Length: 100
Picture 1: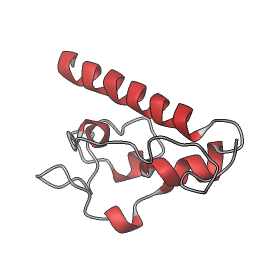
Picture 2: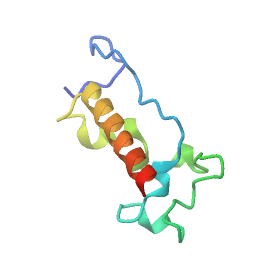
Picture 3: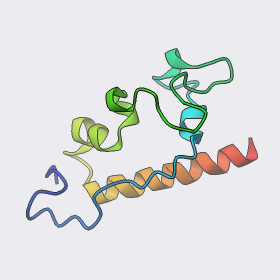
């Protein structure tokens, strides 16, 4: 279960989470471990006007789908399941963003 995606024999069909760069996950960081970086409006101070991260190469583990899985979840959740969970979370954030 803890095999790294991309290693021979892992059987992983998809290799990554497909982010559409809507920026909503970076606009709702109050109440998260990233709150210290929140602007007054609740968005991350590293979110640029074009919905990119100005510290992307050095972003925190919680902001990196693959690294967070490797560090905290790879022994208990398969990569495929992790990707599905991220997609489900993304849908919930988008629904919350539309209604809020």
